[in-house]
Length: 436
Image 1 (cartoon, rainbow, N blue to C red):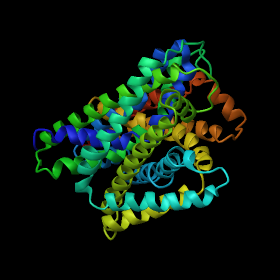
Image 2: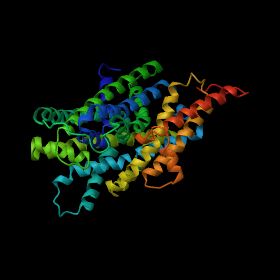
Image 3: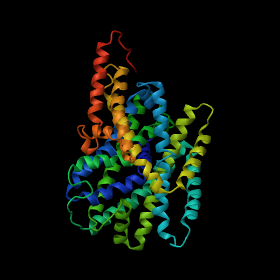
Image 4: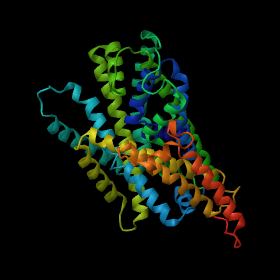
């Protein structure tokens, strides 16, 4: 690899991570957390940056990547889990969410109120997904388009917004609201789920690995080293942007319902009508690069999973599904995202944590199965609860668990399940083979 290849691959990874949720949630956190900002932001960064990096480190550390990690539970689980992850962070959830946010922030502000927005969304999504399809067709070009061209423009726009905001905005921190009054760290921790980056990291690992391999790197140690360098570059930039956006949000006064309102108000305050253009460019570029990254990741995964499906065909299918769901509207998509994330994140966290302790319990499959089963039961209950389903006595049981008041009721069951698995493995008369 050439001298700056790691930098550009890191920029590409940053651009793929940095989508709609990454722009929306930090400024809203800043606006609501008030005097508890740094505590809340620490929790947010832990799950929005730290967890994705840990996932990438785990993938880089295990030969065979996420497939091997999933197979440690069971080969069938590995396939089902990854298919769900790819489809949810791909065409069924994250892709249409990003496309809708790009539309609402990049185009709607310039459209007359009397205009048929349904028709405008259709036309916008045609152009948006056509470009996504064309850029995604060749994975070897992603680093060039995303890392060398689009990301620098996006970063410059972000720097302009944040630097001017630091200088001109001087709003004073107020009392925390919106759930940050107590347990601000855990509230921020759960808000970090909404970026979906820990799940995206499961998918993006294959994109980064492909980008490094296409530069002639085949040695496993070197592959791991370059992947980790790219991850650190992306993580550092993400953390810096989150903190900056959070500070901007904390400097704004007024009532806001979401992060888009905070950023729109900030950019308009700072730049007038030009701020609308600036924020539109930021959202459109951020959402576009994320959709391209997710589309390519899905194409690479499913073309390997299904031998008869070639990469270009899968990319076309993912693009068409994303295009169709985008035209359903953002509100419908967001109704699904929170319950899904509440369910999927605990399973991902438990699986990745066990990966780092794999050798300590000698890779016993029963430990993986037990820990994920215990955590999964309460993760599913929490997800159903987030959908608004009243589960009666089951919900009472969930709410009585330690850490339930901060949304982490699955932690203790996961630990109990893991310990139970270790005991069963030790008491087993027939020693299980160590899983690679």
